[in-house]
Amino acid sequence: KAGVTQTPRYLIKTRGQQVTLSCSPISGHRSVSWYQQTPGQGLQFLFEYFSETQRNKGNFPGRFSGRQFSNSRSEMNVSTLELGDSALYLCASSLTTGFGHSEAFFGQGTRLTVV
Amino acid sequence: AQTVTQSQPEMSVQEAETVTLSCTYDTSESNYYLFWYKQPPSRQMILVIRQEAYKQQNATENRFSVNFQKAAKSFSLKISDSQLGDTAMYFCAFIGTNAGGTSYGKLTFGQGTILTVHP
Image (cartoon, chains in turn green, red):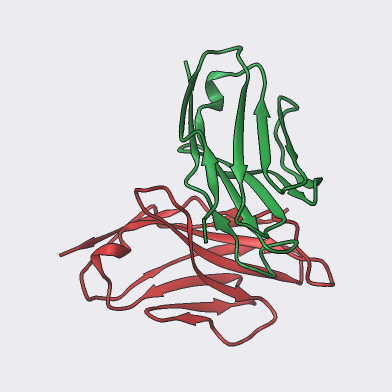
C-alpha cells in the first residue's frame, strides 16, 4: 500500500513568486492536513480538508491557501513568497475525520527554500 | 488554546539503556488524544504511541510506553532497551475532540526533543 506522497520533494523559489505543493494521501483516506515545520517555530498547523471541504485552519496569512479534490488529493498554494516561508511542509492523511479515530500518516515533506 | 511543552531540547542514551522524554500540555478541553511522533533524519514523521485521555491505563507499544498523568497534564515517553535506530527528533502532540470524539486534524506539537542513542 503506497504511503502519503508529496511532490516535489525540494523546491527553490524567489521572493514574490507563488508555489503549489501537492499531496496524495493513502488510498481510501479522506482527511488531509498540512503543517509547516521551521527551526524557529517548530510544527504549525496550516489547514485540514475532508471530502473537499476545509474543516479547520491555522493562524497563517491569506497568502496560504489549499484545496482538496474529489480523489482526496490536496494542494496548498503560497502566493507572494517571503523569505520566512522557507520551511519543510508536511502533509498527513487519515482514514476518517481526525487523528483520534485513526492513525495519521505523514509524507516525507516538501522542502521549500525562498531566496 | 492548547500548548504542548517539551523541556528537554536534547537527550542522549547508551544503547540498551532506558530513557524518558518529558512532555507537559495545557488545555481546557476534556476530550483529547496525546501522541508521540518520531522524526528521523529522513524527515518522515512516524507515530510511536497514542493515548486517549479518557483511558486511565498507560499505553504501551513494545519498547515504548507512556506515563500519562492527567491531573498534572503530563505525558512522558519511556524508551526501554534503546536501539541505534531510535535516534531521531521526538515530538509530543495533542489533539482535541468534540463530545462525539471527532477531531479536526489540528495537531498541536511540542518543540521536540532530539534523542541520540550511542553505541
